[in-house]
Length: 367
Image 1 (tube, helix red, strand yellow):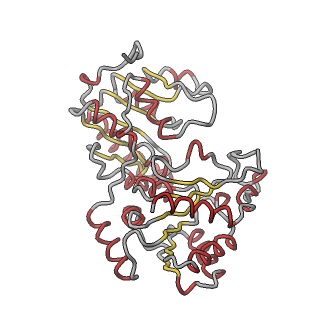
Image 2 (cartoon, helix red, strand yellow):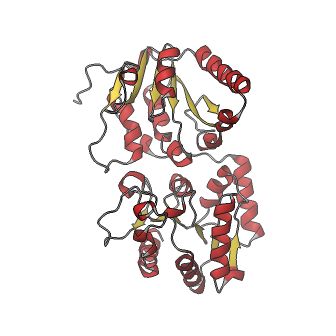
Image 3 (spheres, one colour):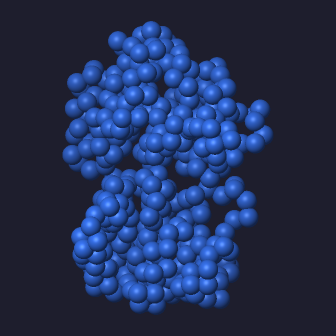
């Protein structure tokens, strides 16, 4: 018989739950098992999310979520009255929902404020030792944080539920991202337009919002040429930002087989990216949201890792290979390049041969 915390929460008495994750796209997607697990253990409950507006598509259409509330990052740059009106409207909607349980999954101070102001009977948050007494006294339950960097963020998020006596099943721990009918139709149309077949092409997303996580242009171009030379169809994607599109343009320009590359950079929404990568036989990328999206779509993943930790952020619950440098014992350092210099030698020195070996091994495993 499993033991449970003495102060476990009886979910039978919980009718409404608010899960707060004010972080980036990948972070938000990695919370999706929290909602699945809650719904399994409290099928009667209405479970809502509070996220930044630009990340909402990571959770919309999730079958366990009743409503996704959003904070617009642009509010902070709006005039004082405009921001106050928007904040008050959001707070009023949240207050009217009458939440019994609030689960806060980051260090953002808004979580403590909401735990106090919404009048939730129960509230859970990470037990950061560095936080002031205001934080510690805002929550009824605090999560014991790992004392090393070896716990994956999915389990880190699920620890909020374990803390209150809820043990997630293996099935509930899977990532959930639902593209939707429109995104699925767009993916099928793109396959037809470019003469691609389902599970017969390689999807590469070489960029990240942080350039220090990226592999050098010349190495990525060489890898692409090798794959195309083997007869693979290769599709490249990038976010519709100047930085990512410039990186992709540089890679394509460096390729000697550029005319055979399918370039979809800046053409896909997040939902469409999910629907499209689900059609690929393999995803290749770096530590980024598209890598997590591919994992959620159960597309086998080859992920290149440098200064960020693959134990925390690696592909979750999907066939995969992580390629990293064993020569640099300092990784994962978590810095934005060596010494903060924006260039990560543990990535720039990764040879093409090592990445190819990972690709071959994974294709053989999943064929």
